[in-house]
Every structure is written in C-alpha cells, then in structure tokens.
Image (cartoon, rainbow over the protein chains, first blue to last red):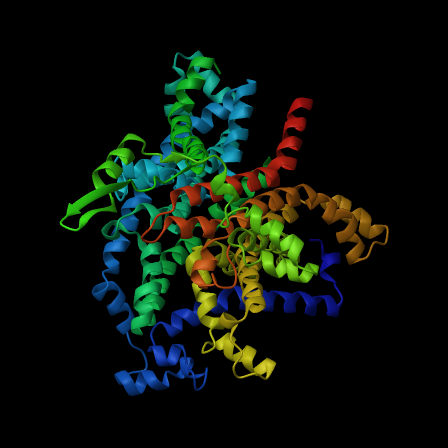
Length: 293
Length: 340
C-alpha cells in the first residue's frame, strides 16, 4: 500500500488490531491450551474445582510429584500401542501420496494439453466426484469388499484413498500444467521425443513446485481421513485418526482421557511442522485454483 | 494432443475413479432397492405317543444357500426409502393430519432419523457457509493492513484450524467447552448457571457444532481472499482515493467487486464440504442432539449389525442432495464453456 494509505485514522488501527488479536486467540489458543494440558493429569485438565488448575497443575504435583507428567503419552504410545497406528499412518500416507501423484501428473498433463471437448467433460465429472461425501462411497464398497475378502487390508484402503484423492489432484495439477507453456513440450517433440518422453524429461523437471504442493494436499487427505480408514481397516491396521476415535469409546470410560489428549497432540505435531515448513506452498496451492482459473 | 496419447495418459486415473467412485455409486443405487433375506423357516412335524405336533425352526442351511445364491438380498423396490428410517412417508402423513400447529409438526418430524439428520445438515451448511465467507473476508482485510513483518506468523497461525484433522480439531474444542474445561467454566460464569452444560442442551450443541464449522473453515476463505487482495489493482484504488472515496467506499466499490469471483469459488467449496459434515458429530458425541446425513450412513454401517441397505438408501438420498446443491454451478460452468 502507498504511504497515503498508511496514514489511517487511529480508530481503524485499533479495529484492525482488535480483529487480529481476537482471531489469533481463536486460532492458536486451543492448540496451546491442549498442548500444555496434555502434560497434566486428568483432574487438572478437566478441573471441577478451578479452571486455573490446568495451568498450575495443582493435582499433577500432588499425584506425580512434578509439575509436568508424560503419563498420558506413555499410556497412549506404549500401553495402547499408538506407535503401531502411527506406523500404519506413515505407510498409508507414503503410498497414497506417491500413487496419487503418479496418476495425477499423467492425467493432469493430458487434461491441460488436450483441446478437445471430452477433456472438459472429464474435468467436470471429476468435480462431481469431488463433491461425493466419502462415506456414501464407503457404503458402496463394503458389500463388495466383504464378498471378495478385500476388507481390512492396508492396500485396499490405500487404493480407495488414491481414488478419492484423484479428482482434487487432477484439478490442481491440471491448473499447474496450464501455466507451463505448451511450446516447451512441442519443441521437444519436434526434436524427436515421443509424447511420454517429452512429459518425462522436459515437463516433469520444471513441474516440481506444483508436484510438491499437490503432494502436500494428498498427504493431508490421507492423514486426516476418518470416514474411510475407520470403516475399511481392521483393528491392527488402523491409522492414527481412527485410533484416536477408538480411545473415545473405550478408554474414556476407564478414566484415561489423557491418553486421547496426548494422542491428539501427537497427531497435531506433524501437521504443525508441515505448515511451518511449507506455508508458502500451501498458500500457493489453496489459491492456485481460485485466483488463476 | 492426439486422442490415443490422451487415452493412455488419463487411463490410470480414469480407471481409479471409475472403479472406486463411479461403481460404488452404482453399487449403492442397486443395494438400496434390495433388503436382506428373511430367514428360511421350515415346519417340522414331530410325532410321539401323544400325537403329532408342528413346530417351526430356522433352516440354517437353506438360509445360507439362499444368501449365497442371491448375495444382494431380495428385491424390495423403494420400500427402504419409504420406511421410518428414511423418508417415512406414513409417519409424515400421520404427523401432518394429527399435529395441530407448525411447531408441533416440526417437533414430531425431528423425531424421525432422516428428517433430524437432513435438517441439521441443511442448517449447518447454510449458516456456516455465509459466516465463513464474511469472517474470512474480515480477517483477510485485517491481515492485509498489518505490517509486512508480522504477516508471516499471522498467516501461519491462521492456517492451523484448517490444516488440523477435523476429528482432532473438533475434539480439542470439545474438551475446552466441557463443563470442566476452560471455555465451559467461562460460559457457566457468564451465564451465572453452574450447571450449564453444552452436552446436555440441544440448541447449545447445534451452536457449538456450527462454531466449530466456522472456526475450521474460516482460514480457507481467509487465504483465498488474502491472495485476491494482493492482486487488487492499485491504480484503481488510488483513483478512487483521489476522487475522495473513504476507506469503506474503497472496499465497497473496488475491493469487493474484485473479490466476487473468488466468493463463488469459496461458496462452492464450502457448500460441498459443509454438506458432508460428519467428524465433529463423532467428536462431540452429539448424536443425541444433532445428526447429519453422513453420520446416519456411518451409524448404519458401523456396529454389530451392518445395515447395508439402509445405509445405501441414505447414501442415495445424500447424493441427490449433493446433486441439487451443485446443479446451479454445473449449469453455469456448462454455459460458460459453451460460449467459448
């Protein structure tokens, strides 16, 4: 903004600061509060006597002898085998991201380069598919998966997540490919490359930023999914999110809410780091579809 | 691009979508018009000294054979759609004639699972979406007028509510509004009612779910608007300023028209996402007070008895809902494409 705009009335400055302060508290406070509380005992995190106990850790001191305790984390990760769920999440996310990107770059490239009408119809049907709530699809999978004994395996879930991911991946990569001049691959083909060689050796090397951004969103979808993973995975193959949900049903009644609280913090931590390191790509990806197209 | 190479390039991803998105839709359509087989009952005559008696038992073998032969179950037409758990045609008519006021009628209808789910889903969608757009815009304008140096951290924290797993984010809020949590305690203090509990009250639960929805989605609207604000034409803004437009008039006549196409995009994405509201209901254990269509399907699928036909019927009704919601956008996109 120009210097003239900087000279704004005091009232507006205060209004802006007020809005920002309230929004920052709303956006950040819940996370900080839960992170802090996860190192306390249940009596402090859910305090009947005084909410401030969650800050000072009054009962934590009297129960464990220290201001902070890692009991919740120990209970969740070791006792309730959250590490297994975390490992399953790693596997699922890794394969979903790699397969999604492989299929998505191929398809997105073709859609960006084709000038025929059917490319548009393809994208439009992808948009319709994108709107389907995943749980409605799950109710379509279950009878078939039971019939053919496909239910419960990690591989099945990976393929399902890849498919559910495709519409979004295609749209995003398609808009990234559109920004790469078609002359680039055309000149490569004039020089004797096949279409696939042009794609592989000329286009992909300049596409890395777009691929990384799309990969981040594929990762988020696989990591955050609850509807598909909870219905399609057997107990031992469960990923982290259904595992957290299962803490709510069984463990809460046993008085071990703190397991769930520390599991929740554990799930949040990688996302936190991801936003920290890839903020620019995430912002770019979210706005790519809207601003350019 | 040649037809042939286009075909080979899109084949893998088309196949994935065909198998795991299109076929499941067909599968729920088919499944929804079938119901489970009834057990085969056989009559056995047992005779003893005192004469013959007829008794009925379940013929396990015959039942298993029938199930194996027709795995879909028996054809039922639209019976599942009209039963009490879905469109509840009979109950609807009964309530209509019996109830003596709109209020009474509404209350009766909310006892029916499908109407309970769809009313919350629709209220959630159409309350959260506009609020997200307005709040996202306000935050974007505020961040845009902040000093450049602090914008990075501001954006970082603003993104968090959206990037967090919905189930987990909802849990974090739920624990805070618990009667023993920090926000719950504050609410009790403000209301002057030490027994106030969000969990126990239907209106509070609805409000809380929508607060979560707004909290979760505002960052999305914010970031799209923020990016849009970066590309506002500075010359137009300058011209408006020279002509004496105050801050509000600049926003009203320069910035809002510039951001209008983005609003369509945000509204489309938000309508789609809010219509499938599901995780917060699980996190808040809100099913006694509020259910959604997605939750209803989840509930049918889970548990000991998987009610596949019932889930399929609700799925079909949900898909119809999505189609109605999307139709204006689709028609518009199609017309625009035709013009090109």
